[in-house]
Length: 367
Image (cartoon, rainbow, N blue to C red):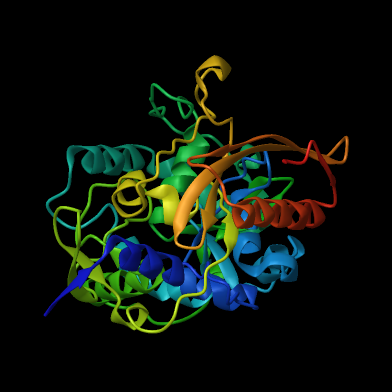
């Protein structure tokens, strides 16, 4: 059976799956369990990504203290830059044990393996230090690498940090906490919960299934930047979307029932918009994160927030939080088309809610 979806139907499946309808979730932990992950990007031009993702769903029920509390209790853990439910670590253990991956390995993976092996003494020194002295940041750990890390980017010569990142992938260390945004590391056995190791193929299939529940509609296989994949393998059921080439996989639970939309301001890293190709195919939305562009080349702003209204992405809000001045500055609202009164009212309402979350006042509110 192949489902044939209109563009509107496909958009509504995606919005339902991301819990962005009028029927808001009420519990932060259950929300993260449903989404499967929340990216821990700390850019705070408006607010950190995790706060924006949870606030855009929970609204006034959310407080930034919630994430801290869930991390302290170990209900959530940070795995490779993502907040995940602690119990989901079981789905990663087989991959950690098989690091650097299953055959055939890419040349890059083999280079990583060779670099870690060449610096085995440094890796063992880090484990010994953590084992004896407990959690500490990377800057306090010994750099005894004999082969330096080489990169053309920001990681060049950051030996300890890169070693920790790879040791995290191996399941040897984990982020214990963050102190003033800096990661504190410990032995993974002290951070991750005890539990089973789900076999590799079974874990991959389960992660695909959960990913489709969170996305609603996705491709079976896509090329996506490093990090969490955005494809779902054989999960769900096959579908086509009118006006869009190719086949999709859809979670059938979202195909029935009425749809009640609302207005939401999204992080540029929100899963609804993070895969820009999927976003363009399903929503016809033109958007880029412009923080890395020179100011003169930006169309919408440094960290513009996409505007969801019902089942459509309709604009971008160029805003910036100035905590020292106690204000949320709204530089502009860029509408893709002429906005309705409901769109304008929805954006105003969400901005007031965001300002309350951040405990600031709105400067230059939109018309």
